[in-house]
Amino acid sequence: SRTIENLTSYLDNNHQSMTIYKTDIAHPENQKLSFAQERLWFIEKYEEGTNAYNLPMVFLLLPTTNLITLKTSIQAIVQRHEILRTVIKESSEGSGYQFVLNDTDNFLEIETVYVTSQEQLNETINSEVNHIYDLKTEHPIRVSFYELNDLLTGKKENYLSIFLHYIFFYIQQ
Image 1 (cartoon, rainbow, N blue to C red):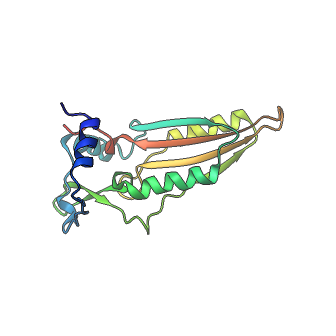
Image 2 (tube, rainbow, N blue to C red):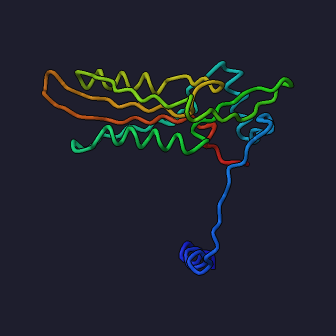
């Protein structure tokens, strides 16, 4: 049967070294969109942007969370995984294709937003949820930290928001 345990056993017993090399794409326009991505891209173009395909996630962080390490880790994940740096370009024939942004020149910026009330936090996150992605230029992921220092209650909390655009996570059909 095919399991991770069997794969591990196979790799342990076969001492051959195997390297998987990154393939250079000579013609990025050959990185076609899936049919599902084409449908979403068409809707995005037709509606001139929509927030209907935003996938929002907001997390309350533990007080002991090392924000610098978390930020660095998220940025490293984005650098490592091309899908998180992929935009949609349009060929001269009008077809959409996937284009991976350079990982050194297109570093994901993660900002910290300071808020002084729960209401301000909710408004700020709601505004971010409704962000309209520019699929031609923008990372399909947006990440922010929110530092709540409630002036009325004295409550201090940190939040992490991760917003993804669905087009790059849509199941290939």
